[in-house]
Amino acid sequence: MPKKSLESLTEPMFYVLMAFRSGPKCGIEIAGLVEKQTEGRIKIGPATLYTVLGKFLEVEYLEEIDKDQPGRKRTYQITRKGLEAYSAEIKRLRYCLHDAKIVETEKAKEQQEKKS
Image 1 (cartoon, rainbow, N blue to C red):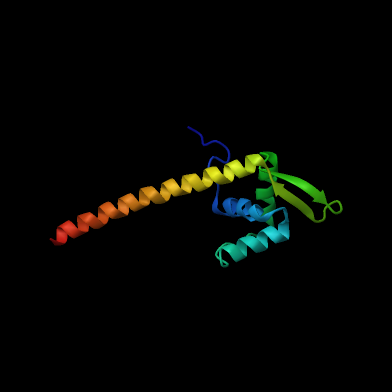
Image 2 (tube, helix red, strand yellow):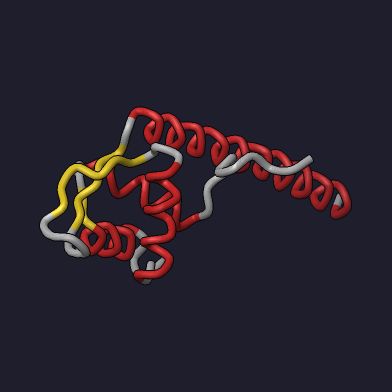
């Protein structure tokens, strides 16, 4: 069965949406916030950033609210649909962590039983 478009977000996509939790942003602000938030672990280049922004505009996770000049600085804000996608991704990640914790706890129990 094919995966629905943006059913789960890539890590850069997730952090781009996270950047909008503090308000509208332009591309440079987004890239800077993502790099700062991840302590440099994720650096989003212009090609990746504008691909993600284009997809998010297309699926209405973001909307453009200001454009200085054609081809220049554009400002975006997250939409209700984008907030819902962000919240759904947080929920999905929490389930992943919960499941991993169960597996790790079971593994630790098995190892303890082998030692006994």
